[in-house]
Image (cartoon, rainbow, N blue to C red):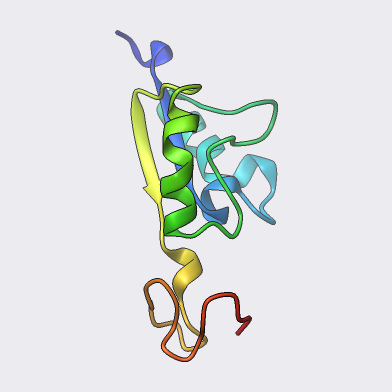
Amino acid sequence: MTKKDLTAGFFGDSIFYGYQTDYESRCFRVFEKESGIRPVFVGRENPLGFPGAGIYDLIKLCDSLFNVYYPDILFLCIGANHFDGEGILRYPYSIEQERGQAQ
């Protein structure tokens, strides 16, 4: 198998989706340019990236997504949506935040 035969999946939240990032600067595009390995994407979008997704959201999506896309290499970006207002990771919600309550 050569590099051109491989695919890489970028599964995770808005960081891997490329939210508010110029297309050519999105991590999966930079990876493709630097490595020569094709990322999983549909058109110009990453179908494995979900803005605002948390850990439980991504777990629920795994089976359905990986029955459609079969990446040879998988990168995960999980947890960025669980930081509190002071930048401390709180799983799954900050101490003061109740489920469904905006912070």
